[in-house]
Image (cartoon, rainbow, N blue to C red; front, side, top):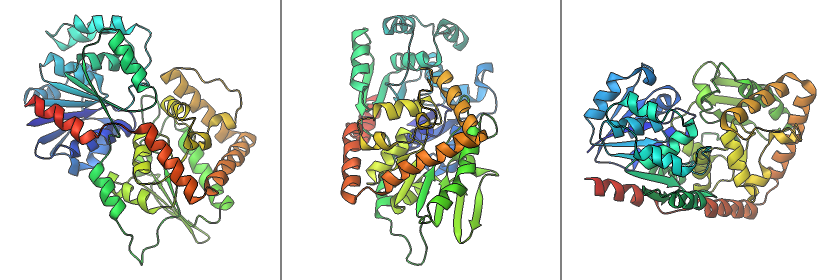
Length: 420
Protein backbone atom coordinates (compact mmCIF):
# COMPACT_ATOMS: atom_id res chain seq x y z
CA UNK A 1 0.00 0.00 0.00
CA UNK A 2 1.29 3.47 -0.92
CA UNK A 3 0.59 5.84 1.97
CA UNK A 4 0.86 9.61 1.59
CA UNK A 5 1.68 11.22 4.93
CA UNK A 6 1.58 14.85 6.08
CA UNK A 7 1.59 16.84 9.32
CA UNK A 8 0.42 20.24 10.48
CA UNK A 9 3.25 22.72 9.96
CA UNK A 10 3.28 23.89 13.58
CA UNK A 11 6.25 23.02 15.77
CA UNK A 12 7.69 19.51 15.96
CA UNK A 13 4.75 17.88 17.77
CA UNK A 14 2.65 16.93 14.70
CA UNK A 15 5.71 15.93 12.64
CA UNK A 16 7.09 13.79 15.47
CA UNK A 17 3.73 12.02 15.80
CA UNK A 18 3.65 11.44 12.05
CA UNK A 19 7.17 10.01 12.18
CA UNK A 20 6.15 7.69 15.01
CA UNK A 21 3.07 6.54 13.09
CA UNK A 22 5.17 5.99 9.96
CA UNK A 23 7.55 3.76 11.88
CA UNK A 24 4.55 1.64 12.92
CA UNK A 25 3.87 0.85 9.24
CA UNK A 26 6.77 -1.23 7.90
CA UNK A 27 5.98 -3.02 4.69
CA UNK A 28 4.09 -0.06 3.23
CA UNK A 29 5.51 2.62 0.96
CA UNK A 30 5.44 5.74 3.15
CA UNK A 31 5.72 9.08 1.37
CA UNK A 32 5.99 12.30 3.36
CA UNK A 33 4.68 15.53 1.84
CA UNK A 34 4.86 18.95 3.45
CA UNK A 35 6.87 22.09 3.99
CA UNK A 36 8.34 24.33 6.68
CA UNK A 37 9.22 22.97 10.09
CA UNK A 38 7.37 19.69 9.40
CA UNK A 39 9.56 19.05 6.34
CA UNK A 40 12.68 19.96 8.34
CA UNK A 41 11.76 17.33 10.92
CA UNK A 42 11.04 14.74 8.22
CA UNK A 43 14.42 15.36 6.55
CA UNK A 44 16.17 15.05 9.92
CA UNK A 45 14.40 11.70 10.46
CA UNK A 46 14.40 10.48 6.88
CA UNK A 47 14.76 6.79 7.78
CA UNK A 48 11.11 6.83 8.90
CA UNK A 49 9.95 7.42 5.31
CA UNK A 50 10.50 5.85 1.92
CA UNK A 51 10.30 9.22 0.19
CA UNK A 52 10.15 12.89 1.15
CA UNK A 53 8.52 15.52 -1.05
CA UNK A 54 9.02 19.08 0.18
CA UNK A 55 6.46 21.44 -1.28
CA UNK A 56 7.84 24.65 -2.74
CA UNK A 57 4.57 26.39 -3.67
CA UNK A 58 2.00 27.81 -1.23
CA UNK A 59 -0.85 25.35 -0.90
CA UNK A 60 -3.49 28.03 -1.12
CA UNK A 61 -2.43 28.73 -4.71
CA UNK A 62 -2.72 25.09 -5.69
CA UNK A 63 -0.05 22.42 -5.72
CA UNK A 64 0.23 20.17 -8.77
CA UNK A 65 2.88 18.07 -7.00
CA UNK A 66 0.54 17.35 -4.10
CA UNK A 67 -2.35 16.60 -6.47
CA UNK A 68 -0.17 14.09 -8.32
CA UNK A 69 0.96 12.45 -5.09
CA UNK A 70 -2.64 12.11 -3.95
CA UNK A 71 -3.63 10.56 -7.25
CA UNK A 72 -0.85 7.97 -6.95
CA UNK A 73 -1.63 7.06 -3.32
CA UNK A 74 -3.80 4.29 -1.87
CA UNK A 75 -4.20 5.84 1.57
CA UNK A 76 -3.55 9.19 3.27
CA UNK A 77 -2.50 9.74 6.87
CA UNK A 78 -2.67 13.31 8.18
CA UNK A 79 -1.54 14.47 11.60
CA UNK A 80 -3.70 17.51 12.33
CA UNK A 81 -3.31 18.85 8.76
CA UNK A 82 -6.92 19.74 8.00
CA UNK A 83 -6.17 20.91 4.47
CA UNK A 84 -4.62 17.56 3.57
CA UNK A 85 -7.79 15.83 4.79
CA UNK A 86 -9.96 18.11 2.66
CA UNK A 87 -7.75 17.53 -0.38
CA UNK A 88 -8.00 13.78 0.17
CA UNK A 89 -11.79 13.92 0.38
CA UNK A 90 -12.02 15.88 -2.87
CA UNK A 91 -9.53 13.49 -4.51
CA UNK A 92 -11.62 10.58 -3.18
CA UNK A 93 -8.73 9.01 -1.32
CA UNK A 94 -9.31 7.26 2.02
CA UNK A 95 -7.81 9.36 4.80
CA UNK A 96 -6.97 8.84 8.45
CA UNK A 97 -6.68 11.91 10.66
CA UNK A 98 -4.40 11.57 13.69
CA UNK A 99 -4.83 14.15 16.45
CA UNK A 100 -2.74 14.45 19.61
CA UNK A 101 -4.56 17.63 20.74
CA UNK A 102 -8.20 16.68 20.20
CA UNK A 103 -9.41 18.36 23.38
CA UNK A 104 -7.52 21.59 22.62
CA UNK A 105 -9.42 22.85 19.59
CA UNK A 106 -11.80 25.72 20.32
CA UNK A 107 -15.03 26.27 18.41
CA UNK A 108 -17.57 29.09 18.18
CA UNK A 109 -19.86 27.32 15.75
CA UNK A 110 -21.71 24.43 17.37
CA UNK A 111 -20.44 20.94 16.63
CA UNK A 112 -23.84 20.23 15.07
CA UNK A 113 -23.32 23.14 12.64
CA UNK A 114 -19.80 21.95 11.79
CA UNK A 115 -21.20 18.47 11.16
CA UNK A 116 -23.89 19.93 8.88
CA UNK A 117 -21.24 21.79 6.86
CA UNK A 118 -19.23 18.62 6.50
CA UNK A 119 -22.26 16.64 5.38
CA UNK A 120 -22.93 19.12 2.57
CA UNK A 121 -19.36 19.92 1.55
CA UNK A 122 -19.02 19.87 -2.27
CA UNK A 123 -16.53 17.32 -3.55
CA UNK A 124 -16.36 18.57 -7.10
CA UNK A 125 -13.30 20.77 -6.58
CA UNK A 126 -10.95 21.90 -3.84
CA UNK A 127 -11.77 25.63 -4.25
CA UNK A 128 -15.48 24.85 -3.88
CA UNK A 129 -14.86 22.75 -0.77
CA UNK A 130 -12.70 25.48 0.74
CA UNK A 131 -15.32 28.15 0.07
CA UNK A 132 -17.94 25.98 1.73
CA UNK A 133 -15.87 25.75 4.93
CA UNK A 134 -14.46 29.28 4.80
CA UNK A 135 -16.60 30.41 7.74
CA UNK A 136 -14.73 28.03 10.06
CA UNK A 137 -11.73 29.07 12.12
CA UNK A 138 -8.43 27.11 11.87
CA UNK A 139 -9.35 25.17 15.02
CA UNK A 140 -12.84 24.43 13.69
CA UNK A 141 -11.36 23.14 10.43
CA UNK A 142 -9.47 20.50 12.38
CA UNK A 143 -12.69 19.47 14.10
CA UNK A 144 -14.32 19.36 10.66
CA UNK A 145 -11.47 17.18 9.41
CA UNK A 146 -12.42 14.59 12.04
CA UNK A 147 -15.90 14.48 10.56
CA UNK A 148 -14.64 14.31 6.98
CA UNK A 149 -11.96 11.64 7.51
CA UNK A 150 -12.72 7.95 7.07
CA UNK A 151 -11.14 7.33 10.46
CA UNK A 152 -9.77 9.61 13.15
CA UNK A 153 -7.28 8.61 15.82
CA UNK A 154 -7.19 10.72 18.99
CA UNK A 155 -4.42 10.53 21.56
CA UNK A 156 -5.63 10.25 25.13
CA UNK A 157 -5.32 13.25 27.46
CA UNK A 158 -7.42 14.64 30.33
CA UNK A 159 -10.72 15.87 28.86
CA UNK A 160 -10.66 13.70 25.72
CA UNK A 161 -13.59 11.53 26.79
CA UNK A 162 -15.69 14.67 27.28
CA UNK A 163 -14.86 15.93 23.77
CA UNK A 164 -15.66 12.53 22.26
CA UNK A 165 -19.03 12.56 24.05
CA UNK A 166 -19.72 16.05 22.69
CA UNK A 167 -19.12 14.75 19.16
CA UNK A 168 -21.52 11.87 19.76
CA UNK A 169 -24.16 14.22 21.19
CA UNK A 170 -23.85 16.39 18.06
CA UNK A 171 -24.77 13.41 15.91
CA UNK A 172 -21.27 12.78 14.58
CA UNK A 173 -20.97 9.28 13.16
CA UNK A 174 -17.28 9.40 12.28
CA UNK A 175 -15.11 6.39 13.11
CA UNK A 176 -13.11 7.71 16.06
CA UNK A 177 -10.42 5.63 17.78
CA UNK A 178 -8.83 6.41 21.14
CA UNK A 179 -5.16 5.60 21.51
CA UNK A 180 -2.35 5.94 24.00
CA UNK A 181 0.90 7.82 23.35
CA UNK A 182 1.69 8.17 19.64
CA UNK A 183 5.44 7.82 19.93
CA UNK A 184 8.32 5.89 18.37
CA UNK A 185 8.07 2.72 20.46
CA UNK A 186 11.04 0.97 18.84
CA UNK A 187 13.15 4.09 19.26
CA UNK A 188 12.16 4.29 22.92
CA UNK A 189 13.02 0.63 23.46
CA UNK A 190 16.43 1.07 21.83
CA UNK A 191 17.07 4.24 23.84
CA UNK A 192 16.17 2.48 27.07
CA UNK A 193 18.56 -0.35 26.28
CA UNK A 194 21.39 1.94 25.16
CA UNK A 195 24.45 2.05 27.40
CA UNK A 196 26.67 5.15 27.13
CA UNK A 197 30.30 4.54 26.26
CA UNK A 198 32.41 4.33 29.41
CA UNK A 199 34.95 6.82 28.05
CA UNK A 200 32.38 9.35 26.80
CA UNK A 201 31.22 11.96 29.32
CA UNK A 202 27.48 12.38 29.31
CA UNK A 203 25.43 15.51 29.82
CA UNK A 204 24.28 16.70 33.23
CA UNK A 205 21.29 18.59 31.82
CA UNK A 206 19.18 18.43 28.68
CA UNK A 207 17.20 21.51 27.59
CA UNK A 208 14.71 20.68 24.83
CA UNK A 209 12.97 23.66 23.21
CA UNK A 210 11.12 21.53 20.65
CA UNK A 211 10.46 22.77 17.13
CA UNK A 212 9.42 26.25 18.30
CA UNK A 213 8.26 27.44 14.87
CA UNK A 214 4.50 27.78 14.31
CA UNK A 215 1.86 30.14 12.84
CA UNK A 216 3.45 33.07 14.74
CA UNK A 217 6.78 32.03 16.22
CA UNK A 218 9.85 31.90 14.01
CA UNK A 219 13.58 31.54 14.54
CA UNK A 220 14.25 35.07 13.31
CA UNK A 221 10.90 36.80 14.03
CA UNK A 222 8.69 36.83 17.12
CA UNK A 223 11.63 35.04 18.69
CA UNK A 224 11.97 36.80 22.05
CA UNK A 225 11.55 33.44 23.78
CA UNK A 226 14.72 32.19 22.09
CA UNK A 227 16.50 35.43 23.01
CA UNK A 228 15.40 34.88 26.60
CA UNK A 229 16.82 31.34 26.59
CA UNK A 230 20.08 32.66 25.11
CA UNK A 231 20.36 35.29 27.85
CA UNK A 232 19.46 32.85 30.61
CA UNK A 233 21.74 29.87 29.89
CA UNK A 234 24.98 31.60 31.07
CA UNK A 235 23.16 32.55 34.29
CA UNK A 236 21.90 28.99 34.66
CA UNK A 237 25.50 27.81 34.59
CA UNK A 238 26.50 30.47 37.12
CA UNK A 239 23.64 29.58 39.47
CA UNK A 240 24.06 25.80 39.20
CA UNK A 241 27.75 24.76 39.17
CA UNK A 242 26.68 21.10 39.19
CA UNK A 243 25.79 21.42 35.49
CA UNK A 244 29.13 21.15 33.69
CA UNK A 245 27.87 19.71 30.37
CA UNK A 246 24.55 20.97 29.00
CA UNK A 247 22.82 19.91 25.79
CA UNK A 248 20.39 22.46 24.32
CA UNK A 249 18.43 20.93 21.47
CA UNK A 250 15.53 21.72 19.17
CA UNK A 251 14.63 23.11 15.79
CA UNK A 252 16.23 26.54 16.31
CA UNK A 253 19.70 25.02 16.72
CA UNK A 254 20.18 23.77 13.18
CA UNK A 255 21.46 27.18 12.05
CA UNK A 256 23.62 29.89 13.53
CA UNK A 257 22.35 29.20 17.05
CA UNK A 258 23.98 25.76 16.93
CA UNK A 259 27.50 24.96 18.03
CA UNK A 260 29.58 24.42 21.15
CA UNK A 261 30.48 27.02 23.76
CA UNK A 262 32.96 26.53 26.61
CA UNK A 263 33.31 28.73 29.66
CA UNK A 264 35.54 28.04 32.68
CA UNK A 265 35.53 24.31 32.11
CA UNK A 266 31.80 24.19 31.40
CA UNK A 267 30.38 23.13 28.05
CA UNK A 268 27.10 23.89 26.27
CA UNK A 269 26.25 22.10 23.03
CA UNK A 270 23.41 23.45 20.90
CA UNK A 271 22.16 20.95 18.32
CA UNK A 272 19.20 19.87 16.22
CA UNK A 273 19.32 16.10 16.77
CA UNK A 274 17.60 13.31 14.86
CA UNK A 275 14.70 12.06 16.96
CA UNK A 276 16.21 8.71 17.93
CA UNK A 277 19.46 10.35 19.02
CA UNK A 278 17.41 12.78 21.10
CA UNK A 279 15.63 9.82 22.72
CA UNK A 280 19.00 8.34 23.64
CA UNK A 281 19.99 11.60 25.29
CA UNK A 282 16.69 11.74 27.19
CA UNK A 283 17.33 8.22 28.48
CA UNK A 284 20.95 8.99 29.46
CA UNK A 285 20.67 12.45 30.98
CA UNK A 286 19.64 12.63 34.64
CA UNK A 287 17.89 16.02 34.48
CA UNK A 288 15.95 17.74 31.72
CA UNK A 289 14.06 20.96 31.06
CA UNK A 290 11.37 20.58 28.44
CA UNK A 291 9.09 22.81 26.39
CA UNK A 292 5.82 21.19 27.52
CA UNK A 293 4.69 19.56 24.30
CA UNK A 294 2.78 16.29 24.66
CA UNK A 295 4.94 14.17 22.36
CA UNK A 296 8.17 15.02 24.17
CA UNK A 297 6.45 14.57 27.53
CA UNK A 298 5.15 11.13 26.55
CA UNK A 299 8.61 10.12 25.37
CA UNK A 300 10.26 11.22 28.60
CA UNK A 301 7.78 9.45 30.86
CA UNK A 302 7.92 6.22 28.85
CA UNK A 303 11.70 6.33 29.37
CA UNK A 304 11.11 6.72 33.10
CA UNK A 305 12.32 10.33 33.15
CA UNK A 306 10.59 13.23 34.86
CA UNK A 307 11.32 16.54 33.09
CA UNK A 308 10.78 20.04 34.43
CA UNK A 309 8.57 22.15 32.16
CA UNK A 310 10.07 25.29 30.70
CA UNK A 311 7.90 28.39 30.46
CA UNK A 312 5.20 28.40 27.79
CA UNK A 313 6.17 29.24 24.22
CA UNK A 314 2.59 29.27 22.92
CA UNK A 315 -1.00 28.81 24.04
CA UNK A 316 -1.03 25.02 23.56
CA UNK A 317 1.68 24.76 26.22
CA UNK A 318 -0.56 26.72 28.60
CA UNK A 319 -3.39 24.26 27.80
CA UNK A 320 -1.14 21.28 28.54
CA UNK A 321 0.09 22.59 31.88
CA UNK A 322 -3.41 23.60 32.99
CA UNK A 323 -4.79 20.15 32.28
CA UNK A 324 -1.93 18.47 34.13
CA UNK A 325 -2.10 20.90 37.07
CA UNK A 326 -3.08 18.09 39.41
CA UNK A 327 0.17 16.22 38.76
CA UNK A 328 3.58 16.91 40.27
CA UNK A 329 4.83 17.75 36.77
CA UNK A 330 2.13 20.39 36.40
CA UNK A 331 2.72 21.73 39.90
CA UNK A 332 6.45 22.25 39.32
CA UNK A 333 6.16 23.67 35.77
CA UNK A 334 7.75 27.00 34.93
CA UNK A 335 5.13 29.65 34.21
CA UNK A 336 5.35 33.23 33.04
CA UNK A 337 2.64 33.91 35.63
CA UNK A 338 5.43 33.53 38.23
CA UNK A 339 7.13 36.56 36.70
CA UNK A 340 4.01 38.64 35.98
CA UNK A 341 1.39 37.58 38.53
CA UNK A 342 -2.15 38.42 37.49
CA UNK A 343 -1.18 38.96 33.85
CA UNK A 344 -4.29 37.92 31.91
CA UNK A 345 -3.68 35.58 28.99
CA UNK A 346 -6.29 35.71 26.20
CA UNK A 347 -8.13 32.40 25.95
CA UNK A 348 -7.37 32.04 22.27
CA UNK A 349 -4.63 30.19 20.39
CA UNK A 350 -3.36 33.10 18.28
CA UNK A 351 -4.01 35.93 20.76
CA UNK A 352 -2.72 33.86 23.67
CA UNK A 353 0.47 32.98 21.80
CA UNK A 354 0.94 36.61 20.78
CA UNK A 355 0.60 37.63 24.44
CA UNK A 356 3.21 35.07 25.49
CA UNK A 357 5.59 36.44 22.85
CA UNK A 358 5.07 39.92 24.32
CA UNK A 359 5.73 38.66 27.86
CA UNK A 360 8.98 36.99 26.80
CA UNK A 361 10.00 40.25 25.09
CA UNK A 362 9.28 42.30 28.21
CA UNK A 363 11.33 39.94 30.35
CA UNK A 364 14.35 39.77 28.07
CA UNK A 365 14.50 43.60 27.80
CA UNK A 366 13.70 44.55 31.41
CA UNK A 367 16.48 43.77 33.90
CA UNK A 368 14.13 43.73 36.90
CA UNK A 369 11.69 41.36 35.23
CA UNK A 370 14.56 39.21 34.03
CA UNK A 371 15.93 39.00 37.58
CA UNK A 372 12.50 37.81 38.74
CA UNK A 373 12.37 35.26 35.91
CA UNK A 374 15.78 33.97 36.92
CA UNK A 375 15.02 33.75 40.63
CA UNK A 376 11.55 32.20 40.31
CA UNK A 377 12.75 29.56 37.87
CA UNK A 378 15.70 28.81 40.13
CA UNK A 379 13.13 28.03 42.83
CA UNK A 380 11.43 25.57 40.48
CA UNK A 381 14.76 24.00 39.54
CA UNK A 382 15.70 23.60 43.20
CA UNK A 383 12.39 21.88 43.95
CA UNK A 384 12.92 19.62 40.95
CA UNK A 385 16.48 18.67 41.89
CA UNK A 386 15.48 17.95 45.49
CA UNK A 387 12.98 15.26 44.49
CA UNK A 388 13.90 11.82 45.75
CA UNK A 389 14.11 8.88 43.32
CA UNK A 390 10.88 7.58 44.79
CA UNK A 391 9.13 10.92 44.21
CA UNK A 392 10.35 10.98 40.61
CA UNK A 393 9.09 7.46 39.98
CA UNK A 394 5.75 8.36 41.49
CA UNK A 395 5.47 11.49 39.33
CA UNK A 396 6.29 9.51 36.18
CA UNK A 397 3.67 6.89 37.08
CA UNK A 398 1.15 9.67 37.70
CA UNK A 399 1.75 11.10 34.22
CA UNK A 400 1.54 7.69 32.59
CA UNK A 401 -1.88 7.13 34.16
CA UNK A 402 -3.06 10.53 32.89
CA UNK A 403 -1.80 9.93 29.34
CA UNK A 404 -2.42 6.21 28.93
CA UNK A 405 -4.72 4.64 26.36
CA UNK A 406 -5.06 1.68 23.98
CA UNK A 407 -1.75 0.68 22.33
CA UNK A 408 -1.12 2.79 19.25
CA UNK A 409 0.33 -0.02 17.07
CA UNK A 410 -2.80 -2.17 17.32
CA UNK A 411 -5.12 0.80 16.76
CA UNK A 412 -3.26 1.97 13.62
CA UNK A 413 -2.82 -1.57 12.30
CA UNK A 414 -6.53 -2.38 12.67
CA UNK A 415 -7.50 0.70 10.66
CA UNK A 416 -5.13 0.02 7.78
CA UNK A 417 -5.94 -3.70 7.75
CA UNK A 418 -9.61 -2.83 7.33
CA UNK A 419 -8.70 -0.39 4.51
CA UNK A 420 -7.00 -3.04 2.38
